[in-house]
Image (cartoon, rainbow, N blue to C red):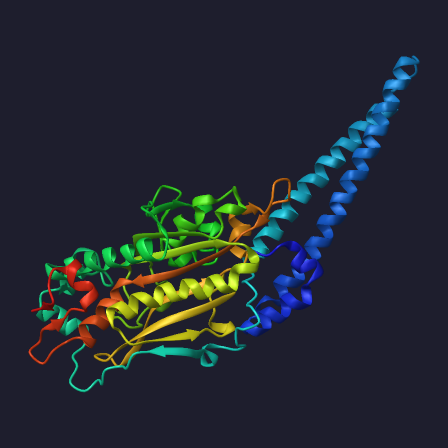
Length: 424
């Protein structure tokens, strides 16, 4: 969420940021309304202060006249009238402030200068790693996975519905192996603190990281309770220090967690429904970092490199895309997507988004730090990235490493965790 001063003092920059996203036409009425509401709010605050000053003066006059034995009936009536007027203005002010907050929730983050302007056609490949396998004769992962007894798509749909997957036998062990490989890498080599967090969060947490109110239709809500199944570990991990002030010595702070993730994908019906490409429940290891504002750019490069390292250890060819402003997520100021090539489906598959949010999330969640004793607290910058999301990684592994006899080679880094060098 932006500071209202962005609307008041930097409206041109805010509008230009929305234009770069291709969203100015849609959001111009919201910005204009916020400008009006902000003026009304400041006028109401001034009016309340003036009325309170007048009431205080009248109250003092009442006291003086009572001591002098004079009639105070008129002054007391004036004081009551001022009190009623103050209450009326304060009620209107509360409504105005609620409307301002609601309007601010509708405006996405402003992207950073390196982010290209435009829609997804302006995404830029900034680097590649490895050589994609030729697609000739490579079967899609769902055929390989079911033939090897790793996936049970039909029973997943039977017990839960489309978009839910059952992993069986070695397939289930593969999920566990990926989790352990990623967590060991990030905690032992990259310095992250490992967390085990709830997968149910409250509304304040969803608001804090920006999932609500914007993306309510994509969330799984607990019936009869104010709780939500998490769409990503970003939500509980980022909110861990909500409403707290950290010491500068704690920054940068790095945390990671494995969780299942739940997404209704309400806006993506009919897209990539085969196999593991788009599911409603999936497993993921998430990286979250807090840092000082001046370190945001360097921390994004560091975090992205940590996610890339997983793909390098798995030997999966990938590319890094810098997303254009129109394709950058609502909360993000700059995002790199990591995509692996899956030859069986002939596609690049996104397995990670690594983003810096500037103070957009921290302002919503009120996560601050104090640079030095006695100094005014500042908002941290937050960052996160998947490292990695399992389903598409598994899809790429089954397609990239499949052999002519139907078996699948296991990358060397994964073998100690899986306990096998080949899946047959």
